[in-house]
Image (cartoon, rainbow, N blue to C red):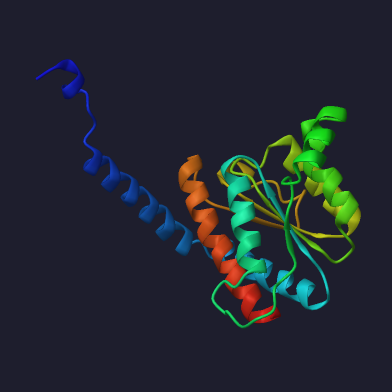
Length: 201
């Protein structure tokens, strides 16, 4: 057998390991009473904001940016209830002209904050996704959300657990591994969408 063949990973074993890691993390989340309570609180407070005429703004970088558009799509389109009204949700950072202009003329740290400052009103909601919770543009948009009178929900990982001073609600997945954190973020995001859909539409 060639050296290349002997170094080929056992893909089925790798898949099994990854599934086991995600299952173990989900079980850890299921047993994390403070995290579950915070998630329910975020859902209920977001739904009340929508009922009062508010808008949900969602943002993130990289894979979290993909999750931001995913969740805004679930809220605007139907998630489970195909007969309900569309819910107002905007994924920040996807107007390429505005985003590139802000990044070029100011800094990349301002790309979400400046859009939020232009669009948000008191009583709106920000869901900020960041596996680390430390990204400068996430910290800046949370600051702007406070200035605009928005409910701030930070959806993060273990490193962001102590960031309670910059958000009203912190949903910190107990992991430091980015792919696993993002997988759980999507599950928590789906729950938030389902709950908001049920309560606010």
